[in-house]
Length: 361
Ligand code: 4PW
Image (cartoon, rainbow, N blue to C red; front, side):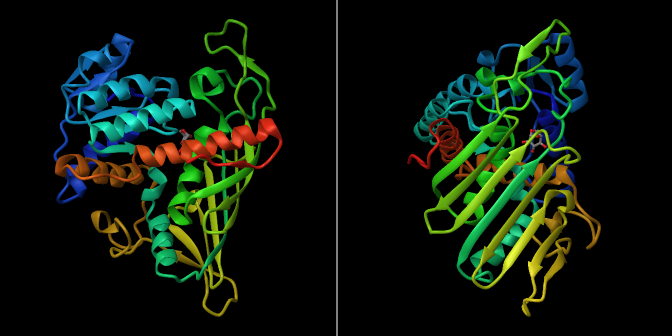
């Protein structure tokens, strides 16, 4: 596993929970943790339960049954492609890459390797999202007409919040668009289908921020927020939005889907609930998705004993590592990551050109 920050902890927690809660979970040996700072790496390996450490990914990506790339976006392509060329399955965090061309190279390497690949779109594994998907596929909403997805956070509202790789276009590719919008685009594809064209805008409100090491300032070269209108292949219309400068919004990923016969609404801040339009069309009913027959809930607690954000990673890792163990394909894989990246790229192009842009195939 390359990286031991926020996402490293989320995945390591999932590895530890798998044998405790998922009956037929694949056995996971936490072998080698990769990073550059030896002291911090040793501390993290000990805390996260890894047997050994490596400061050079080149030395180990061909020695393991699966490689997790949880580094900054600019560290996604090279180690991932090298691992795939060695025949090692890879799970890479989102967005797949900082640029469309890098994402294309990664997807090509994945197709050539023919091994399971995964992209960290963990919100597909929220039970309420799975339940919404079941309703849509069963035709309960009729023909899907509209999708609305927004993802709001507030950690960059303060102009003195420090710069980081996440505010640097060379390293991240984009800001709120790739960091948050990638998840929303993935759910749009998952629930409604492929996006055909977009009209988008990106905005940067704070142009420079204090450098993280306390020496002066650094320019902000990514967007603080984006918005887009989209048209799906199947004729549905949608709007997408994300911001990292939305005061009071900590992690509000809200999804609404409307069809000819019904509608559903979801917010990550209430992730055990799905709002479903009642059959009498007299308002939404809040459905608690906490019964043992709801998706994934049989692994956990008695009905009503709610799940949290970290459980999505357990479900995601169960599915991905089962595919690795069984040699089957996995979705969302790199083809999905590339499809999302094409939409992100089209939104950036639309902002630059001031016009609707077709999403490349
Ligand atoms: O899901 C979110 C992300 O993709 C997380 O809440 C944090 O914000 C980490 O990266 C983004």
